[in-house]
Length: 409
Image (tube, rainbow, N blue to C red):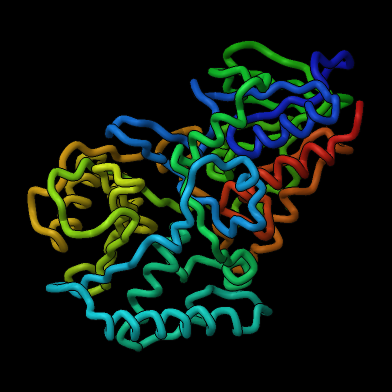
């Protein structure tokens, strides 16, 4: 049973973007808090390193819809990626001509317009409202589903897809999104290597337990991913209400595995340009690539959805080999050197990259954001934001909202 003499007003589970935002908001309001983080670093799914000799974001990469993105106010050096890149599409044996690219982008706009114009009620899979049969439709569906949302359009709620659609500007920080978030975590009361395995929220406060011991707090803000929650990585006493558990199940984690390589030779694409392959029988689930950010001699890319999960099961070597083969199909052998492959899907602290809503579950985001137990327990994170789900903006705004919901003790 939770004690009556809390050691801190608010305990925050997870030092990712939502946890950092919640802690900053609480401290600014004069509230006491502590952030309990299972890993040996802050940042969560926003994490940058220089292993390849240049900044490489393992997870979050862009600040999307930057005019409404709260993290944009903290930016250092950056570029508007939309203004400096060109997109190249490989058709199996060559790159598309300007005329073919223009046709592709007309089809792309029509595809997205069809989704946006479709009735949202009753909700159904996004694939049911998507154009089919056109020469570019399979490529567009793969891009918008597996490569953008980390899951096939057939698994995504149409309502959620439309209501969480993103626009530009898409800003690329030179320090990496991970570097930006690490700066924002500086000075916060974060306890690293403090995983929480049990949370007693029976009241009057809460008790959090882990292999490090126990902590009493007035309230708790839980920012761990829906993947961890669904897998039972955190035990709640009492068990969460059935409707909350259903909401978590309705917001599973998709997977976007990111990889980076040193470039050993010039392949003819300027910094920030991107390339990807069209869907063909030989390449049913191709990858996507971005070249030489800020002039660095690296290229990074993504494989998402079903293929990402399948490769994860086969291991890092399989993902690396598949990425090298995808790149070689466009640029030939011998261009890629040292590799870095992320593993968000089997990291027990995340179990995926970001959430998507199953058909019928857009409202689950708002439901999961509602406090429980007279405010003793609140959830935050990108999965709980009904507009900017899947982004650092959604995580940040949800953390601030959860902090504001927790009344003074």
